[in-house]
View 1 (cartoon, rainbow, N blue to C red):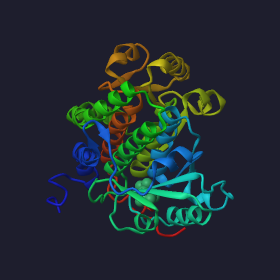
View 2: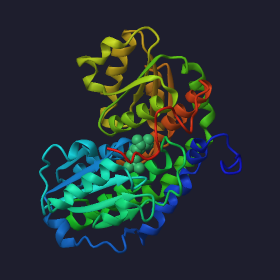
View 3: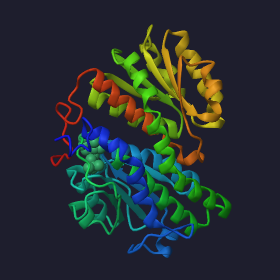
Length: 368
Ligand code: G6P
């Protein structure tokens, strides 16, 4: 009923709008006096110092959170992090033992492949840490440690608030580990914590300006193929933006690392093809501008996304620009994903799709 959907037409939209609260609820109990604290974790300081690799195992959007986490953790922890699809993990003779931490990410806590991967990791002697939304789910019960995302029930098949809260937990884990390992300078730690606490209100700000995104959706909803390009964390966000769009709108879409375009995808760009170009890394901005020019030269229509500081510069090369608030560079995915969720939603709405229950998809996949 409409009441269940908070007065909105779809659960997905309700859940998009709930993100400031979900992120706040996930963050606030874990930050005390400016420090990240996880209560009830059996993971010891000694163990964190001794581990020599981190593996992140998940499916779908949860896997995309892992893609972000790889960039973030490797940058701030200087430990190798590998992200593996749960359905591949079991069958690739994974290199994991007592010195590996396996982080599994799952909204439902019931995804069959993720659960099987968790069991395999344990069998090989790894420590397991689960990031889960559903309290008391199988993955939550079987992992050595569990950290809950306090997103509340997520009904729409396409995840939004679970993704956002998973991302926040991965930031918190990184901060805590970085403190233990001494790899994050104290000023940087403080700066990230302070900015993290501003994320909910910045998400609110993006949501308030959603009409502009709805307008762009109304221009582009008829495209038959859409490409998302970006570098580094932007690439991870592209993967999520592209998945979201194809899941609910049934438009063919691909996410490409912007530098890799010329090795393949650029041959698919034709007059009017929409390219969503993410340019949220200041130090990679000029590289993105070149990639935008490359696709423009092949006739693409470019919708750019960047932080407020670079919006003007991006307008010089892109056809349209979505500008988001500035934040600490590593936290940018928490903001950048929001316009992409809204864009997918509005495109699917224009196309008359069954947004909350896209064809052939299930919220929780309990078969391998
Ligand atoms: C299904 C859902 C996806 C989700 C994936 C992993 O395919 O449709 O939205 O990302 O499962 O689910 P989990 O509950 O493990 O996060």
